[in-house]
Figure 1 (tube, rainbow, N blue to C red):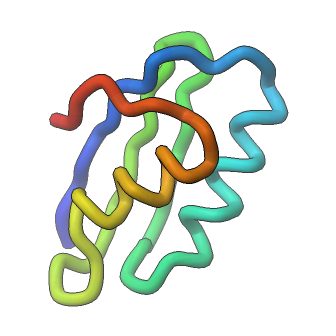
Figure 2 (tube, rainbow, N blue to C red):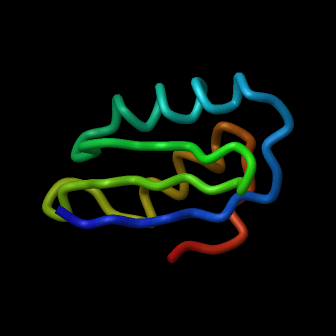
Length: 71
């Protein structure tokens, strides 16, 4: 299992949490995702054999949340 954090540009409402976590949880290889609303971060635990940070980043950005960087 690997972990990645994404720093998002901005989260404007608490419902963003459910939207991002819901879509990420359906992605192959995602074990757990957690959105930290006040710090604009998304933490994802994933199986590196079936998911990658690049793919997860694309999923987040397709939802309309620009990713500034990943850690």
